[in-house]
Image (tube, rainbow, N blue to C red):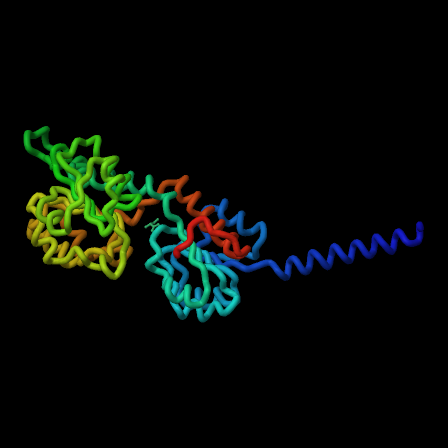
Length: 347
Ligand SMILES: O=C(O)[C@H](O)CO
């Protein structure tokens, strides 16, 4: 018995070693395209996967992505990464999941993923409040000319209080048109309501009467929204149908006092047409959190205008929101690798 014991111990040791080795070799591998996604998400992945990340806080160069994705089981990406057939080819047959830390997924060729049985995760809902809040902040900064006024404090333009100086256009008694009435659109509407607009309208493919009743909103067609709104707020997804839907013809129909706010995607707007509409004072002002391209080049004519506020795509940039987006992206990957239901899957 005493002689056997050491042999058993030896056996147990090698068995443990074997298990450890085989577990390690079967660890699935994930490539993360940014090193600075919140660590709570990365830690979730590191518990059961081999995780490698791009090293810089800038988009991973295309050739590096194509190299790093090879042989990976999952890809954790963000909206600046174009995930197309070439990336999927480079990844090879092991790739089971692409998970984006964003609600928008137009940077991913979903059809191509589906064709190959690769599941696609995203992060809806979690960023709805943050994005609605930022939309209101941008709207108020634009209609009350906050940045223009703030500059005057520093450049000596503030000579005295003056009766009509730096006046903007209030939301009260105005007509607000929302283009898109999904989760974010509805939250924007509920935040606009306390400012006492005369009417909130929305333009969508789906009627959504119950959601509309909650914020006293009325569904109108695209033309009515364009022709009658004092504020137009874009909160739709970028799809082939919405691409550059706000073009010269659309701006031509808007009221001269119209304020145009976009926190969805730059691609829904023909930016040259927007420039012309602002420059010629065809419309009053615009507030953009999204542009084409991003970042907007410093020599963009838009940046020379006084009647525009441009933000650097910070709709969901609220600390807790971004942390939870990181965790959801990770949990989507873990679920897909286990073959379980994902928290949010593009289907
Ligand atoms: O699509 C998204 O998630 C936003 O644009 C950035 O968070």
